[in-house]
Structures are given as structure tokens and as C-alpha cells.
Image (cartoon, rainbow, N blue to C red; front, side, top):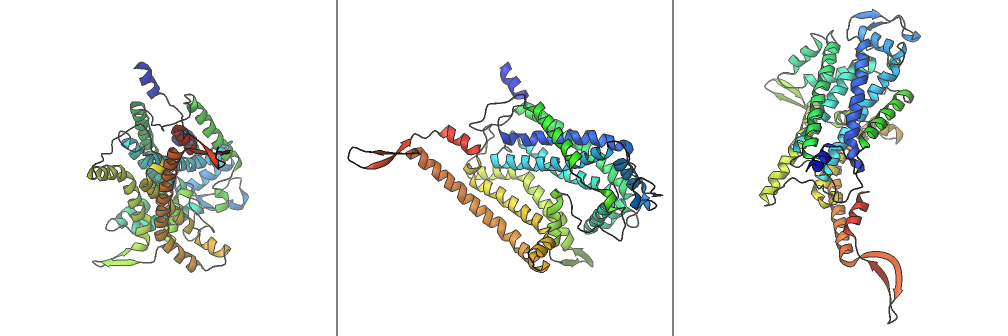
Length: 446
């Protein structure tokens, strides 16, 4: 009994897909450390000062104290640019790792009881990571973040009833005002504290319930956690040192009447940009008030439905299973994606929907590269985001059923060896080897 409890409490790396959670944890640790260093040099004030730093093209311009401190940190503090770029790269990697962890849990059924709370924690972490990323992007007060503030104002004002009030809390009586950067800075500090609490709770739940596993897994590696920490931190150092990101000195200070050419959001917000671009310019008047559906639907309704569906799926699956007399009980052994064709099809349909919206964010570039009109590309994506997920679901479900059928035939007739033998009566046939179900499962996953 004692060895069993100890085994549950130690991290075990028995499948390559389990690394996503570890990458998320250690990239978040890098975020906390680099963020603490950045706090020492960053000033969130919006008072106007004259830039007199080392970057000549901007010298003499009136900039905010936030932009001035970000420039000082980037170009004049020893190692400041490395820390700042590591922080930005760690944010991008963290969101990617959380998204892949959610996809892995969904495909393998790891969201079922007793791990439903872990699933909800990861869903919440994804939303909080996006919010932390957006608040962090606004802090340098450069021309790129200024464009993001315009979008935030448009989204907030599209909210019925309370939109104007929320906008005044963020920006004050006029845009951009003198309070939005301090507000964003405060949110950027509070959100990570909530995320720390969630990750601590998640770690306690893992220690309590243990790790899930596949039927056939690789040998367990108990020393994988330090290796994952070193690998994640090392890769972020390489990215921060060798790959430039967010060069605010090229963007310049934020100007309410200007926006940088070719401005694009971070990768995880690309689907919102694409949804905004392909959404028709619909408006609805209710009680003398105009609702801008062109902004409200892609920026609030679509993400709201997405996160609600993620959070509610475990309960919905239990309810449907109970109605069909098949209670969905929790277990440690994970599903193979082919064993649950409907769930796998839903996952692929969701990824397809997200990918099409993400691609739609480049509708102008696609039109330029393929010598098409922007309107033609936009119309294509309007149909594709509806038809594409349906086709992806049908094809994925068919492939899963075909793989199941192939496994059943292999189990019945054996595995083809490629060896041709001659029978006593002069005929030729292929020699078949007995099927090893466990080995087939492991080979299919690897």
C-alpha cells in the first residue's frame, strides 16, 4: 500500500503526450520569474515625457512613461531585452501547451470523473492565459498595442446595457484616456495569482487521483520532471536570445489616429481576428438601441459558446450515457481516439473550425498571394467555417470506424507477414502471424 501511494504522488512520464502539462507548468514558472524582473523596471504611468533614450529615431518624441520605461528596459538595461523576449515567448508557449493538453485530455477521455475538476482547471487556465496575454500586450503602450486598445474599446462598447459603463471604467471619459495602462497592469498582476492557485489545486488533484495511463504504455520515467523543466527553460532562453519578438522601437509610441501596417495579434487570438473579418456587418435595433452584431458575435458570442461547450462537455457526456443506459464511470485507462469516433470527430471539427478562422485572419494576404479579391476570399471563409467542420467530423468518424474494422479483421485472421508458402496441393498463400493486441495498441499510439 505504501509503495502504491508513493507511486501516485510522484510524477511519471509514460507517454509523449503527457509532456504538454509539464511544458505548461514550467513555461508558467518562467513567466513568473521574468515577470518579477520586468516589474522592477517597468512604469505603468501614462503621463507624457520626452524620450531621451539610446534609440535615435525616436529621440525627442513625446511618449508615455510606460513606453519610455519599456524602451529603457529593452535597450539600456543589461539583459533586459532577453528577459522581456523570454517573457513574451513563454506566454505564447504556455497557451499552446494548455491548448494541446486540453486536446489530449478530450481525445483520450481524461476529462471523466474523477478528473473532471482537472479538466475545468485547464479550461479556465486557457481563458485566463488569453486574458493575461492581451493585458500584457497593452503594457508597452506602443503603436501595435494601441491598435489592440481600439479593438478592446469596440468590443466593450458592443456589450448591451453595460458596454458604455465598462468602457468608461477602462478608458475614462475619452479614448485612450490616462487610466487604461494602469488598469491593464493591475489585471496583468492579478490574473497570474489566480492561475497560480489553479495550478496548485491541479497538482494536489493529480497527487490525490494519480495519473491516467494507456492500456500499453512505455516504461515509466520518474526523473522526467527535472528534464522537462530544463528543456522548457532552455528552449525559452534560446527563443528569447535568438528570435526577435515585439520590437516596440520599430512600432513607435501609441498614436490614437495611427496603427502599424500589417498588425496581427498573437497566434492564439488569430481566430478572433478572422471571425471579425468574415462576419457580415449586421446590426440589430432593439428598443431604440443598436446592437453591433458584427463585433458582438465574433468577439463575445463565439468565444463564450466555445468555452461553455468545453466546460460542459463532461456533464453532457454523462447525461447522454445515462439516457442510453451506459453510465460514464471514471477510470484510469485512457481511450484511444479511434475507439470513440464521435468524440474524436467533434475534436477534429473544433480544430478545423478554429483553423479556418485563424486562416481567415490572413484574408488580405491570401487574396494578394493568389491574385484574388478580398471579397472572394472572405465569402469563401464564410461558407468554409460552416461546411468545413461538418466534413471534418464525417471523415474523421469514418476513419475511426475503418481503423476499428481493420483491427477486428486482424484479430480474426492474423497479421500479414509477407511470407508466401506453398501448400501440399500446389497452391500458394501468405503465412499469417497471430495478432498481438497489446503490441498493436502501443504501435498505433507511438
